[in-house]
Length: 380
Image (cartoon, rainbow, N blue to C red):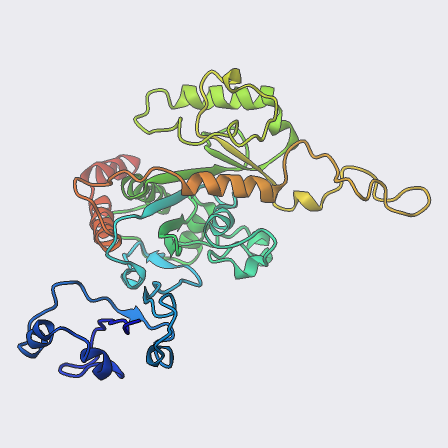
């Protein structure tokens, strides 16, 4: 078997990589002549990783699979970084993790304070429910922050997975803790805002307008059913009752009936077999609603823990909770989110890096929006 020829990008001008002299001898005369004259090869040359080409290349009986080369994987993120800081300024550090390829999905989240947005985005992107929350890619509220009623996320946080899915975690909308911080710490407001509560409301509108422009999917998180929701976190057992579920769908559909958003037809709880035996036509119209129970609900036991003799009661059977486990539901939600359609966000097809520059322009346009400025003036 002839020795395989692998073209490698030279590290320095005029110098080939180590071991290239033997491979160069196998090149056709025309190709060698083209390289001497400084011509570029007709085929693209990628940065490749050598798989066993050292000793294996010298053997005439080399397995052809061993000598194959593969593209290096992009750098893996270990935690989220800032896309927009707490001063609402754009940050450029995320560009280092983006590639020049177009198959990308952008998922953003909106919600009130303490509804579990950061935890949800961590579980959708890179973490598992059984992991320590302190290791989540999006930092969740610590016990101290919960006790003093604070918020964890400020601005917009960015994380991209190896599957090339961008997740954007945002600060809570209409946050009382952000308003309290502005008032009690005498933070200077931008000159166009006179009152702190006006500034907090405008921040919420700016973030919402930004997400609806640069994301393929926007998840609205709520933990109780009074306002508009798409994902109800911390749902109770009665929320999973088919009759109550139907009422929730009707309410959302009536609220959103005049909206141009695609709020139904792309996510389904019935197709996940969460309600076995429930017919598909049970809901006249199924909106994009998904329910998640409390994350620690699996630790609760609805049956007595011990029998009269001291041993566990029904130790081999899990207690009935009225719904599947949190891990099971999160896995189903993650699967549906990752399979969402990826339509064009602009008039041209965007690569990951193009999207970053596009998002930067959109954020700048949102902050300078005349419509939002006029609304802010009316609030004052």
